[in-house]
Image (tube, rainbow, N blue to C red; front, side, top):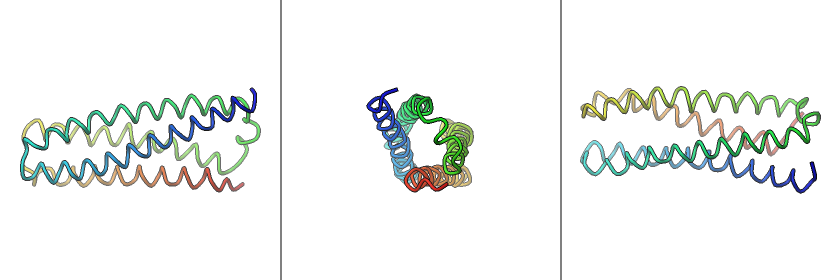
Length: 155
């Protein structure tokens, strides 16, 4: 693999992480706006609800870019990074991001979706809203940790 091909894979990797982290942040902000509007005007909240569902596509695109470019970079530098502690921690954090995003967020999101479908009273949703917010904050902190590990690359 040439250096140019590796650099393209690295840029693609950074773009994928940025798409996922940025989408997570926008998801958090949009969800807060959705919930505040939902409490007062449920009809207006439908626009934000549909937007929240569409954001999930970007998370998938970001994950695809991360995985494809990560595999390409590992082909070139497996022996260099594979043995380094920061990289092993980064892989564990990436696994936590997948578990948190695909597992916990999806479970809490399904529960929230059922509340919305049943036109639940906002008070009944408070626990689910809190859990959803916690999952989102954890996800953003995990992405921050990925950035820190990637910048400082301690051994």
